[in-house]
Image (cartoon, one colour):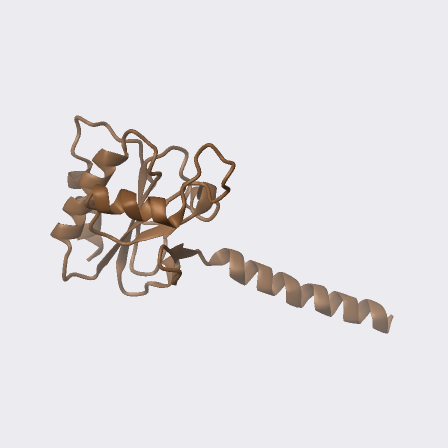
Length: 168
């Protein structure tokens, strides 16, 4: 009976750690720093979730840079979340150096975070297509459903800005 109690206690502790870890979204920047996305308390967070190889990413970068300029100096944090694979044999592989070149050549004005294959963001935030934008409120919760897909003829920054302005 004592063994069962100890086993149950160990299991309960392990589950608590797993649940705590899964509740947080930690992504790694190209410089190796870890960023807890949903721990940016007091700030609105915009995530531009995409991949360097996607054709519409160029338009997503334009939107991201427009939003970064608009919210500079305000309680808004913006990241580009690259879902490119880190597996060298993958068709969608991109090294950190590749992503840095992408950011530089596209003049991306925000930090790039890695989320290989979208493991930390797609399911958590309900993203079903790339590229997408996610807006988190000042408590780290998703404010609205993802802005998925990009129509090159539509300025998505207007819609995103309305949401962000309502949260500030």
